[in-house]
Length: 202
Image (cartoon, rainbow, N blue to C red; front, side, top):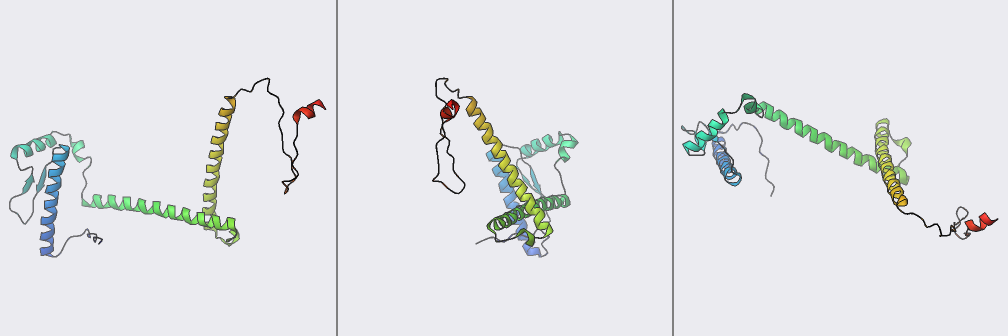
């Protein structure tokens, strides 16, 4: 069963808000302990709320907490505030990332749709004259991408063929006689052998 996503908004109901606080505070403390134990990194967590008169801290040891705080105090101001953000900045960052993701998906969907249109045109199911100006422009962009990809592949094959040809040196004693098939268009039965030696002797 799929879990419902939690709406990121203030919980108006006090009972629900208190239960959520206790549950998520326990999760934060558990994650802090796991991260400190598994990765051996200094972590300090302080939770101050209206439900407890005394703040809850991690690590519980005064000395361990003091060491982390002293290390934090020794950092320059630039390093302290480099990755800091308030709630508004955090939400704006999430919105920006979601917008970029939506644009990427929309672009991919448009390219897939234009590929289908291109295949329909090749099969004769769709005529280019039936497309609008925007569709023709998008279709032209997809076709250009295919042509560029084909040209790059052709260049790679030609380069590989040229390198393999230069590495093979023909023997001078080998005869230069080769058979070249000639046939009329549309016919595969009228094929004759053409001898270069015979032509040169004539």
